[in-house]
Amino acid sequence: MVINYYYYSSVEQYVANKMSIVVSAIDRFAGNAQTNYNSEIRSMVENYEFKNQIELMVIDINGKVAVTSSGFSVEDAGDISDFNAALKSEKGEASEVIKLPTGEKVLAYTVLIAPLGSDYQAVRMLVSLESIDRQVIFIITIVALFFIAIIILMIFTGQFFVRSIVNPVKEVNAFTKRIAKGDFSDRLTKKSDDELGELCDSINNMANELANTESMKNEFISSVSHELRTPLTAIKGWSETLMTIRDDPETFSKGMRVITGETERLSNMVEELLDFSRLQDGRLKLNKTKMDLLAELGETILIYQERAKKLDITLDYYEPEMLPYVYGDKNRLKQVFINIVDNAIKYSDAGDKISVEAYVQGNDIVVSVSDTGIGISKEDLPKVKAKFFKANQTRRGSGIGLAVADEIIQLHGGTLTLESELNVGTTVVITLPPMETENIVKDKSDKVQVELISTDDERK
Image 1 (cartoon, rainbow, N blue to C red):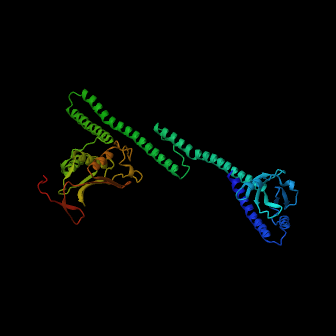
Image 2 (cartoon, rainbow, N blue to C red):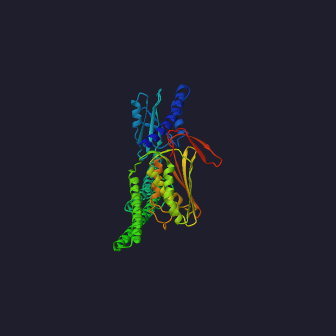
Image 3 (cartoon, rainbow, N blue to C red):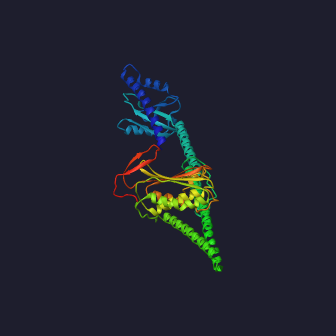
């Protein structure tokens, strides 16, 4: 094993260093003529300072262990294959891991020395590897326990991952399937502030929007059904009445007026539904031409003046002398004006006032319709242009007219904005781009007067 090799190599290097010191000492003995070579070697071995760690031996010329630092019987020296290997080595040294007769594992390191007439030809060191083996076993045990702990941690981490990621994803999947089936009553529980938590918030918001849309759609269907039923009931009732009348011209004329009026109202509602369908499918087309915006706005005011008067609602129209031409669909823009003025009357009571004015502001043509009616709450104001939405369910209407009007104005490159306060009133502001460039001069009242650069087309 790698660990064994590392530790055994370290021990071998340690022994080699100690052996180098011993061999150097023996060389000094050999160089001193007055020294008893054999006795000096024996004395050095017997008094070796590291004998508690290293067993130092001397091998004689017969290949037998002659002296040991421990003083034990030389029979306990065991296998001396390292000595035989040293004899064959060019360096004159060798090391091997062997087992003593006692069963102890040791590292044996032998270095040959020059006999010089001596009885000794090699020095040998033995170092026990038992403590090294115990340390290696300890390290292997620690490493094994570490990997076992890692595996256990991975198992628990995997389970946590399943609980924290996979299970919530399954919950989200099941929830979206319920939404697909039309069940918007439930909501996801947000359990964290990470990306999964943001996903839960997004899906919950989507469910809220779908639930609101579904609710508004149901209210829309109910409102439309009611709105369609009312004129049909009137038409049917008067038709049956007229069938029984023979010689009452006044009643007959009144009935025909009711039938004609209700038929017109029914036709308008159907047209509004068709427009809404075209908007949904992107099929609403504009027939744009050079048009006089004041003409369409004036006709709208004329249509509603009598009705406003009957309801005791003041309808004021501040008509400028002229406005720049607009490149637009006059029928669609008139439809927008009718919807806005109709809403103003619809959501106003007797004694209220409606003001309509048109002017140029900056580079835009502005049409403003203000009323002192019931107004819209702050909570409902952002939703009033949404499809199917009705701020007041007690008032007649389908809830799609303003959505259609907003789309028409956008198709003309303009904007439709609302400002409202509950029980104070509402102001609808329509801005449209002019067809041509104007020289605009503001007067003292912050309104503007317009002088056309092109005089080829005079208003009639």
